[in-house]
Image (tube, rainbow, N blue to C red):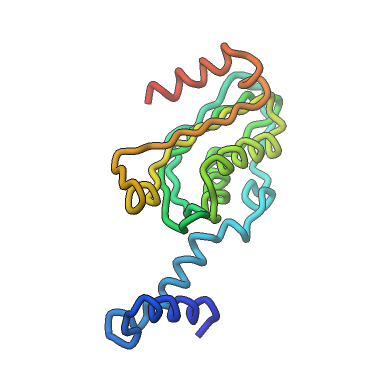
Length: 184
């Protein structure tokens, strides 16, 4: 039994469960495996995720990738939060392969996380990977720590945004981005 499995075994026991009953026999192993997957972002780095998929392009107009779904765990309660991420950027000679945006989102979502930091990390990673003139990232998510416990508000949604470069400095650029993602 791995140390993580053993810890899950202990948690179930502390909750008063009979860890030898049929339904729980393999739960520590399954829970450990699930947690390792849900936090696999710690084992990733940007260069590995991008994997050379940055291409020369003379496009200098806005590129938007929206509706990238994600699942993460809040670092305060280890409960899930899930939602969608929208990314826009202004290339400056290089564009990023489309699937890499989803991989960047997953790299940060698969860590114990708060949404505010995840939004910033995604924006900074896109800039680092592309050296773009600006980036905008909006994340909208529902948090189980707000829905399942505490105030138990089922329809609450949190939105965070980070604007860098031209998206922060130029209101027209920011409004174009906001208008494009609102049309979805």
